[in-house]
Amino acid sequence: MLFRHLLFLGACVCLFSCGNNLDDADAGADSANPPAEGFDLTDSDPQAIALADSVMLAIGGRKNWDDTRYLYWNFFGARTLLWDKLGKKARVESIRDSSVYLVDIASGESRIKMYGKEQTSADTLAKYGERGMGMWINDSYWLVMPFKLKDSGVTLKYMGQDTTKAGEMAEVLQLTFKEVGNTPNNKYLVYVDPGSKLVTQWEYFGNAADAEPRFSLPWTDYKEYGSIMLSGGRGERALTDIAVFEEVPESAFTSFDPVDLPE
Figure (cartoon, one colour):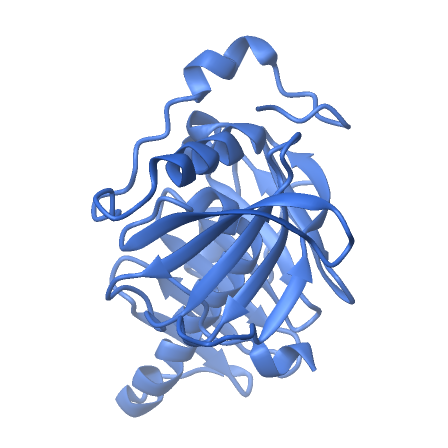
């Protein structure tokens, strides 16, 4: 079962031709992709860094990613998330128990509605606030991992070429982490199509020393959302209802009332 492996994953955390309408004229401006503070530049391979930069360009470019503010998606039918990337806030709504988490990403604190009312007990907020933050960390990585290849604490290695489970040739990046995130011992192998430079598969290792991955899943169904490319296909499951907004009501992050999102 895939949900057995929905752990707190990793850290925190060439334009492609088929169906891509991003403007080639912006490619030069978007090609700059400076690493986050704390990225392991010393131990990362130059070839791996160059491939990561190509991936960023393929999915819209660094400037478009930096300018993207609001992202929305449904995580495998379990919950919906609305993320104010620039404002560092998130709204997580659990479909199964109708709980709502209003997460302050900068502070790690949350306001929580459970059992039909807002929770005020310090013990409850401490326990379930961590859960709300953890869901955002996990679920956002499943959506936007290709934008985070040069995050703080990441070490990139180029592992050569290999074949995906779908039988397609790919260039392989290895991601390991240095004392960041909820699970710093994780490792990922990220498969990149040599032509489109899109991520086509990832493999997750609970411990970097493990010989076999805990799962290996495709990245498919890329579409343009706003000015970036996002993938929803993850094999037997999918991230659905993906959207990028320029504006949403501020109350989405301050009120437990239902949110009226833009069409």
